[in-house]
Length: 222
Length: 217
Image (cartoon, rainbow over all chains, first blue to last red; front, side, top):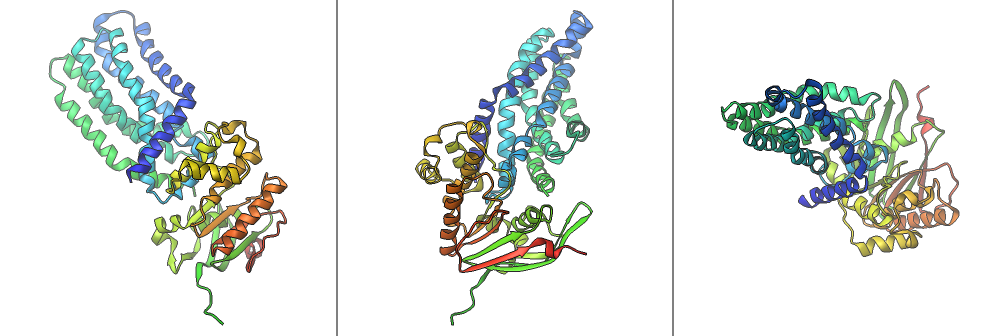
């Protein structure tokens, strides 16, 4: 069971390494979008501190949305997805492996880069820690939910826009609790409750979305 | 007279709908071990659709497909374990070498192979000098060979479903593939394939189905 999971993660990480440029575009997008706000609203420290959690979270969310469309596209185009559907191994595990690898190459770098961007917004030390923690819990949920949308819009023209319409509503709770955690910590209320709810979002996404994604892939391949 | 050969695959009154068009209806056949089925028909008649139905990638509009007497939908994982499908697309990644492609494809199918086994298969299919080269540098025929190398590692898989396997292959490779199919039939395996080329394949039991004959009037 676990062997196929690791085989898929290994394969997708190797593929991502051989197409490094794709990974860097997502990261660059995240950094640039997050940096546009301080440039746009001006160097008003209090204002920047207040909007930092929301801006960083929305940037992370958009960066995920931008890249998640590619999750199954290449495998669909070259016929690998057919072979995955015909595997003796459970499709849910293959899907989970793909999403794990996807998170490792796009979600994890966001978590690592976010503290640097937090400094740009003059976030206090404690809030930066909470920001990293909230992204570490939230971005896997974004990747998992994005997988459902990527599978549902597979092979459609204009799939990217449709994907955004399908997935953004599902991202709302993650965004609220994620950005809320940082905001609450900065306001001195403690981020515990928000982080617990964010963890709950992640765990429910982990339980539901591989199954939903696998079902969507079977429909998409018909 | 021995007993009748036991049917592996039974297809009963199959109908296939693509979009709004009914491609065929009432298509039935039985395939036993050692049996070869050539699916014929003009372009767009529904050959590929039939093969995808037989793999369980698509659901039939009507009818049923049974593997050893049981519907394939009721035993998906067992059926997939007994099936090898090669589609139009090669499922070959540009970024991987021939060797990596073959090993990854086998692992994904749930039949992991060792490096030595994969190298032997690539050697047999005529890619011995190209195993480390990224697939992006391979020709169309060589990429097809990488996909076909999976057949050489699937001797124990009873049912092979091959969609246009001879496309893009040169004459020696076509011969090699025909011999591989013959060996599989001799082992008691069954093969279903489509082709527009005239390739002689020796077999005790050959059936031919023209999908176009089942088109609704």
